[in-house]
Amino acid sequence: MNNYNDQRNFLSNSSFLGTRDGLVSHLITGGQLGYGYKAGAFDAATPLAFSPAVICVFATPTMYDNMPDDTEGILRQTIKAMFECHAKSVTGIDINYTMDTGSQPIGHDGQELTVPTQSKRQAVNPAFTYPEVTGNLVWNLHRRWLWDINDPDTNAGLEHMNGKHGNATLAPFTMSTYSVTFIAIQYDQTQHPDRIIDAAVYTNVWPTTTTELGMERQIGTTSVKERPITYTGYVMHNDRTRELGCLVAHELDLRSERYRVASPNSEGVSQMLGASGYATSGFQGVEQAPGIVQDGDLSRGEATALDIAHSAREQKNGDEWNKVAPDGADSFQGSVHDGAVDIQH
Image 1 (cartoon, rainbow, N blue to C red):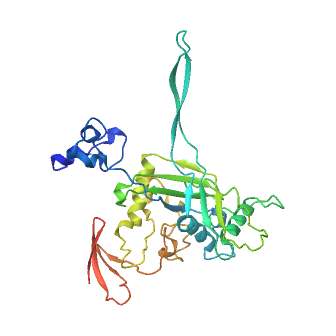
Image 2 (cartoon, rainbow, N blue to C red; image 1 turned 120 degrees about the horizontal axis):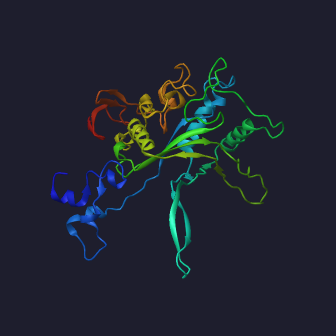
Image 3 (cartoon, rainbow, N blue to C red; image 1 turned 180 degrees about the vertical axis):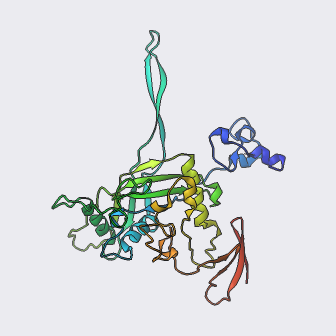
């Protein structure tokens, strides 16, 4: 902080408050709801806006890794894209902590003395709502997923494990052969990768229902369908998962995209994930990661999180980059400085 006003608005070192890196409101000098108001420190009362969380899939079910009828990994890529790019709403992934208590009577007036016993992290049940699309894709994909876990007619499951030549070793944080692992990143309004609000990792995610197909007969009525799918899940949330979220956010680099001049595109999560204790071999979306990129036969762009466009590819050389120009315009060059993009035509 370089001036007095900033020191009244924000704390620069606040880890002792339990907060993460970045600016934190200085309520001691900037609280606005006491007696009177403090016009010189309005910024300290700036409300925190939560934008929709960003989801990045690390691993899809390893039972689908080496399917003989899906040599290009379309099934795994479709599951990944469905989680990242097709859900219109995602609930049941919020983080909450509670404290159990114990108590005993004190005195004769009926009061009890309550003491803390154990803190607990609330369990999660992710619920994704998908618009149904041509081919009844969402419903059929989840039907197959459930049948491959346990067929309703034979009670048999698909036991194929990850790896070739009988290698049945699961990557870290991949808790089963039939589940998905993903991270949810909560950005602030700047979308700066070092200023994310928080991040959590969810594993052992698999569906518990397909929802109803929607077959009915109502004269004069035609409808479109949505699929509210519920999943099981196990959440991991601590300082390390936020550090991992920052690494992923740096690779996604959403802040540098210029949506006014080009379709958005993002790069895959790099092997920097290994620095946070996560083996990159367990993640899909990482270049050369088993399960989504087999022996380098799949280009990086086809396995990226939020890969929602195939145009405007970036060609990076240090801080310099070139992009496909919009229709009717010449090519242009620019540079990236701390997330801001400068363009010269």
